[in-house]
Each structure stands twice: as structure tokens, then as C-alpha cells.
Image (cartoon, rainbow, N blue to C red; front, side, top):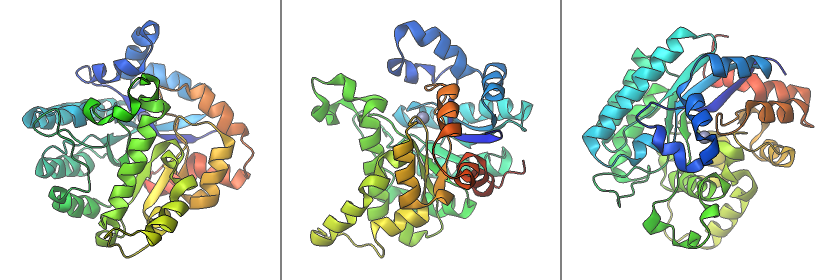
Length: 324
Ligand code: ZN
């Protein structure tokens, strides 16, 4: 399929590069560094080869969210967003951007989101899960009460919020003891991010902001497969939860899922049948995945051609109001 648009596609600022090193084989790191730093010719050549018209580019993970010193996180988010803005300005026909936000300081995060969207022309924000605030052991999820005003202001911007994975911190990772292969994108990313998404739903966030739209990658981090059972069991054991709708209703009305890093037709079909083909979007997770692997799989996947057009391109054009 020609004209594909991808929206979980990463770059790095030289100062955030090291965030990605543990997720890459040592012998592949020098090539990966090149790919992460490039928002230009290397990427464009691959995009041309594999029928990808546009990438919505975001900072690598965990980057800003793992900078526990608050002023440094604020400053680094600005620098990363400025650099991405310069990259995108060179090829606005092929690249758009998600802003990185310093959630360590909710007011600064609001100002940065407003600057990214109003001044830099970014199409939304991408945040790497919880933030470490003030000290390395601190873990603050986005349902925390301190974010009430942030969400009010972010919702007013009327742009999507991509909830991207990161690993849990070591002191909270004992379930993975002795099995380091479970960390990162193999397993821990998905568990961490699906749980975070459920926390947002269970906090009543979408009762307060019914139009807010959150995107989760990797076929919704398993939520399309599991969401029915969450409702089924919470109804039996509500444990004080106070929300107006079912989890399934929030998932259907406030979430989009992407195909990033998971090129499996069975999972895609499950996502389509749970959330609907209007809420599934093509993505690759470049450069951690190969564009060619994603494109070859998606272009030939056994789905209706109407759905391929929507998932590959039209849903992104609509969601991000892209004039392409
Ligand atoms: Zn990613």
C-alpha cells in the first residue's frame, strides 16, 4: 500500500540517545545511533522504499520521563522539541511531530504542550509512561491528583496523547528477578502501559474529559484481548471504584491502538473486532523495528481493503487533521 502514515516512530536528541542503548544489541548500536539521530535522508529512503508517505516523529524512551531533576527535565524537553521542530521544518510533507512533555512539573508540561501545538505546529504529545520526580525512586503515574489541571488544559488543545511504554524502575520489578529478558519490549513494556491505561480509565479521567483521546501502541498493549474480563471482574469486585462507564466504553470512545512493533494479523484482527477499524492505526516503531518488516506484513495482511486504507492512512489523516 502506498501513502502509509506511521505514528510511533522515534528519534533521539544527542542528550537522550543513551536511553535507548540497553534495548539494542552492542553490535547494532552504532547503526541504531545513526538511525535515531537522523530525521532525514536515511529515514526518507526507507519510507520511499516501503510506501510510507509520512511519519509522526517522537522522542525515544524513557528520555524526559526518567530525568528526576525537575529543572533539567523541563529544559531537556524544550531542547528535544526544538530540535524535532527544526527537523520537521525541512520536510513538512513527510514528517510531523509529537511533543515530549516534562510531567515532573505539571504546569511546565502544560506550557510545553501549548508551545508544541500552538507555536511549533506539532500534532499531539507522546509521553513515556510514569515520571520520576525529584528522586530516582519516585514513580508518578498520570492519574495522580497533581495532573488534574494538566489534563484540563491538555484536553482543551484537542489533540491526541500517545501513552508510550517504559520499563518499571528496578525496585518495582521484582517479578522479573532472574529473567531480565522479560524487561523492555518483550513483555514489561506492555504490562506497564496497559496497566497505566487502565489506571487512567479507572481514575474517572474520561468522565471529566469525555473527548480526550489516548493512543496506545503494540496492538493496544493487549487491551483489546483483555478489556472484557476487566469489566466482568470489576463488576464482581469493584473495590471502591467510581466511574460512570464501563472500561470497555472508555476503550471504545477514548482510545486508539496502533500496530507498532507487532506485525501479527491475528492480533490486528482482534483489535479491529474489539475497537473497530476506525480506531486502529498503522505504525512501525522505527528504528527499533524495520520499516520493511512492518510494511511487508501490513500490505499483505488478510483484512478488507477498506480497512487497510483506513488503518494505513485515512484514520491518521482524520485524527491529526493532516492536509496531505
Ligand atoms: Zn516505541
